Length: 106
Image 1 (spheres, helix red, strand yellow):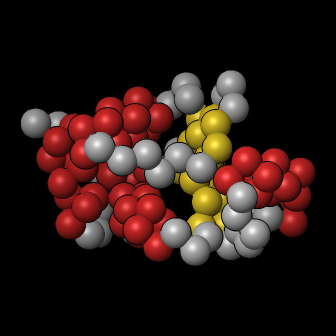
Image 2 (spheres, one colour):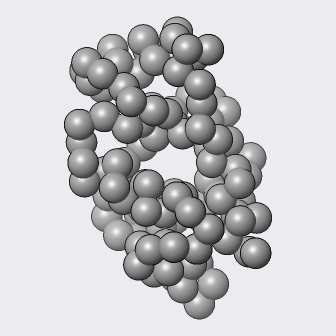
C-alpha cells in the first residue's frame, strides 16, 4: 500500500502527445529512439526520495530535467532503464525496489 502511494507519482507519458518533449530530450541526450518517458514532479515525495537514493548509490539515470519535473526515458541504455523500471514498476516487486524502500524508511 505504501509502495503504491509513493510510486503513483511516476507518470508514464504518451509519446504521441509529447512529441516536443521527445525532440528536446533526444537532442539533449543524443538518443535516436525513445520507447517511453516517465515524468516525476519535483513537488512530490518521490522526487525527494529518488534524488536521495540515486546520490546514495552513485548513479544518475535522469535523462532530462526542467524547472518542474524529472524525466526518465526508455531507450537503448539497458542499465539505467532497468534501474528505474525496477524501482517504479509493479507494486512492491523487485530487489531494487525493496532496497530502495528499506533505505528510505530505515
